[in-house]
Image 1 (cartoon, rainbow, N blue to C red):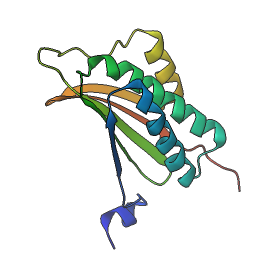
Image 2: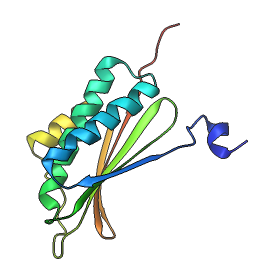
Image 3: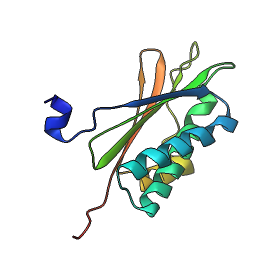
Length: 136
């Protein structure tokens, strides 16, 4: 038995890279919705995650240079979805997304946790949402 199986975490992480262009954010939203549905999130939670990925992308895209890519990884335990969205840092850009703006406020309201970090050569925004408890 693998460690992922022992902890209840799915054994797969999905990676997706698209051009850093607002036209491709819909692909990230669609993948987010599909993976959240596979984890049995409610329709409302799926919508929250789709909007959160949209806001995360909106915060990161201004930091991407021309011809760069927007990357996302999707993972987490069976009852959570952790999404890391990132763009390459352009030379001299060590700024983080605006954490005082409206987009950040919306993102923070939709996800359980939101963090941002400039690690190595990428600007990474990580959000996590846990599936709500269901009565049986």
